[in-house]
Length: 480
Image 1 (cartoon, rainbow, N blue to C red):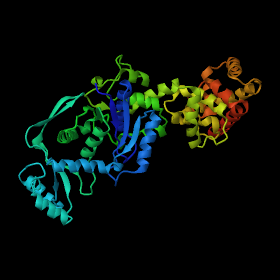
Image 2 (cartoon, rainbow, N blue to C red):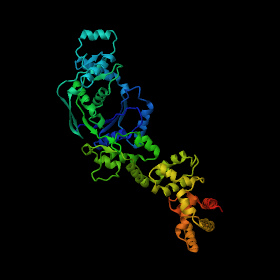
Image 3 (cartoon, helix red, strand yellow):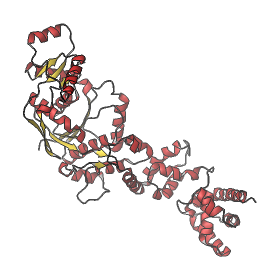
């Protein structure tokens, strides 16, 4: 096999979406598996839609995911002379030609084709213009495009590593444009020139580009370039098997980062969108992906986008995450929610993160689960109120709880639990009669970390204050 050189070539017209991230990842895994090179190329010849902000967002997204590159970024907009020189070469060799047809003429051709039930293809009107006529139009400053002379017979075959051979009849292509009237190359032309110039060995990209590939092969043939190997990865579909869109929820890497997903969970998930390791496990490291990744094991079938699975994976990675790293990841979410300021107690936050992490699946959920540790003003869960606060005698039980807690000198989970167990025995009640209303009183919730873990983290003063506040609330709703 040739030295492996692959590329990720985004258009900087938006954020890094899941489909683009998967394309980048599969190229990166293939390069790393084969000790090859990954090139970042920027397809920014659409000057109206390309923006620096979009490119920054794409680069930031790749870096956050841990996808690096060996060369680049290489911008097409800075290589315009290269494309023009190759276009001129094709014209000189009579493999391409100048087309001076106006928009009105092209519209008329489409109308005529529609009348006869034919596809709207260019008629080839300028294909054989005499040289003197071409010179006349040039001297007049008439606008032109450059079109490739496409063979009208035969077939063009795409040898695809994933899909096998895919044939296209040349008769289905017109003499398509390779250089536009503003001297900008078309996507297919610039792509071929760059892939050849950068010595790309394998083009791994989404299935939606398969229809472009025969046109690119025709350009390779016209220029006499050696063709790379092609591999078109299946589409990513929504759960209802429709085209993935914003209506199906978050679809960009930035959105998932802002929702509190870890990059390794996203990498694991998008690797599964078309590939799985030999042992069939769904949770695996990037190192394992690199060691096993081959294109012959990439699925031909559409991948189904399932945020539930991603969230499940994220929960696993959160539980396995180093506590210091997880704490640092959570802090911006706490700040964003206004729960802490710049002068925060890192060690305390770390303890709270450790207490709540087991049940939560995103960093945002962890921050939300931590809110009552930092905020005394919270509402009580409505169902919990009906179930625990409206129960007869609960206010008296909580008053007894205050008395025993006030006597606990070393306010840790062992001593507070002992005090509560003794009170349960003294009052001859079930543990739930005391535990559940206490949890609701000090957190506003009916679930969460262990009750005595919460008490220890809140401390004696705050725990007792919150129970007193709950007693007043209970007395109020009972009209006492």
